[in-house]
Amino acid sequence: MAANERYWRDGELASNEWLITRHRDEQEVGSATTLTDEQYSQLLLYRKELRDWPIHPDFPDSAARPLPPEWLQPKPVT
Image (tube, rainbow, N blue to C red; front, side):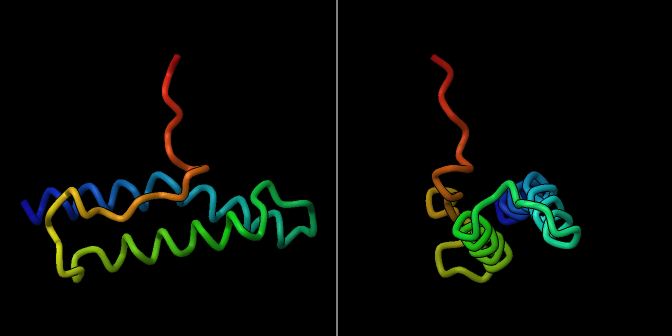
């Protein structure tokens, strides 16, 4: 069970790494950023929670997984 949760966590980190890279690249070249400062901070916090997930007291209970910021959550298909 713990291995599955680490696999999930690693996948979550990988799935949004491009957002971090794009934001930093945009800052480096001095262009407007796609993410707001608040979104970027929320993303960084989410990624920290993911990295800390294996040491969380409720690990590996998938019901207690860190939740992504609302703007990053998948939208339901209607």
